[in-house]
Amino acid sequence: MIIIEMNILQKRAKINNLAMNKLKCNPCPVKELFLDQLSVVNYRNLTGIDFSLDRNINCFVGDNGVGKTNALDAIYFLAMGKSYSNSITSQNISHQADFSIIEGVFDKSGKSLQIQCHFEREGKKTIKRNRKAYKKIADHVGVIPVVIISPTDRDLISEGSSVRRKFLDRTISQSNKSYLQNLLAYQRILNQRNALLKHFASSNQFDKDTLSVFNEKLVQFGQPIYQARKKFVEAFQPLFQDRYQFISGGKEVVSIGYESKIGDNNFEILLEESLQKDRILQYTSIGPHKDDLHFQINNFPIKKFGSQGQQKTFLIALKLAQFDVIRNQMNVLPILLLDDIFDKLDDYRVMQIINLVNDDSFGQLFVTDTNKERTENIIKQTAQSYSMFSL
Picture 1 (cartoon, rainbow, N blue to C red):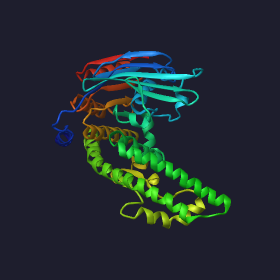
Picture 2: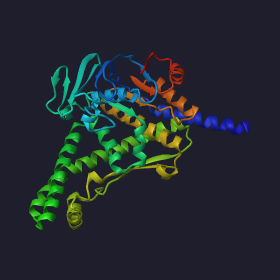
Picture 3: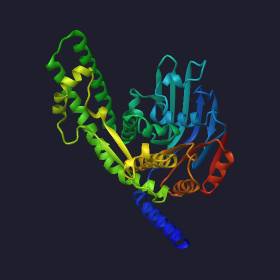
């Protein structure tokens, strides 16, 4: 029994060493990014609060419902120009308030960046960078790279394909401006084509020439979206597998598959072939807006065959690989937000995550937990400076 246990530990150690060697940063120095000051007014249940933050680890602790997650979401809003969990901006304003303001002072490679997000109940939203408002909010995406690990990430496994496409889009858009532009243009053309199909059905008319114009535009913007996603998944897969193997100790084999009807096919021909189906359905049934990711553990869908701990490990590895991709492509250490990640993980997997944090490939970290003592005991093991905020 002792020999068997030693062999298992040696195997885990070997796997961990191999994984960590693969995860080392590129030899070129990576730019640092820090959030030094955070001010939140009327954001959900945070009616007025200021934080002076540590450049290593910051912990928001307290009972459920006190605003820990909202503090992380406010940081995400500063980075992405919208909430992580609720895309309807006005619904993030505190009850009985007419507006919300989130301000952050960042240090990006020695340069100060002041970001302010101001949005109103009636729908107006303004994002300013060093007091200058963006003409297009999409231009702000990627300025403050960020990765969040949240309990709501379980939707990536349990819910439909739209959630997984959103994961792809949020990740690629931070480092690829043309991808975001193509995505916005594709969605606009898609909505117009769907409206045209509905018009044809309601008016009992049909104009193939008009529809072909929208087909051409969908191909123009949709083909590069597919290519970018395919390239991303190819680069993402080994990083994700390495992260999972390190956290789990090599217990399971995981994989991610990218499903797209485009593949090696001609997108324009696919649209023509699906024309009769689209006319019946009154919407566009094929294209990048139907792409999906398949998550597997030991060659089976993790949704059906993964335990809660395995699923959580899968999601954490997914987001840490997202961190790796953004870091490698942008040469900047993203801000990492960890919302309640210690729940449902055994002690071994918790320690592996802490070992990752001790690695110099990570930058500023934000953590939430309901148990202050547990969090502080875990964080102390990192030998990093930290601040605790009780909400």
